[in-house]
Length: 163
Image 1 (cartoon, rainbow, N blue to C red):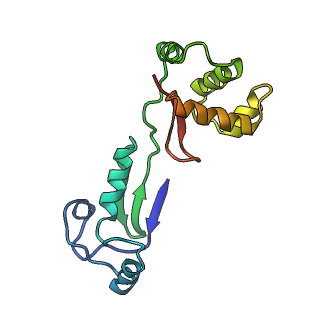
Image 2: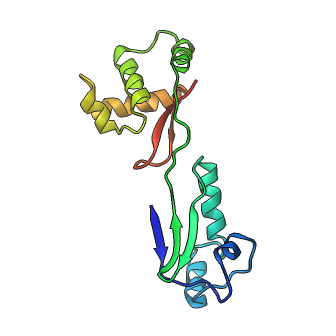
Image 3: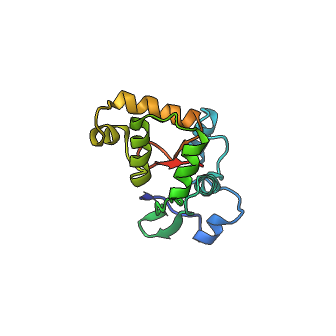
């Protein structure tokens, strides 16, 4: 995903300057101050740092930044963190909770192992005799039991089967 801001960097600045420690020079201080006073931002000059930190904390690659005549670009690569779930992990998960899983629950976990980015709707459409609400209930139950974790958001996230 690419986000472009039609603004310009201060005179003499490069992307390297933007990525290093620097004093903030809002392009329009009046607008920056209005956002600050309304509580929309806690301080200006920390946006790039916060973007990079958030990506790292969620296991994503650091975005690329570039500046050209059309503006300042932020490019997110969407290289998702490792999603591998092995048969060994599935066996450990099954052992962890004993044989208390229903056939339907095993089918959900098996489906998520193959399609970790699946939505509740996709799961319910691909498995027999389960509604979207049933999938929602089971996903919540798996999370409570520590079997499943949601990584990322609703649109671009995925399900990670835990050991």
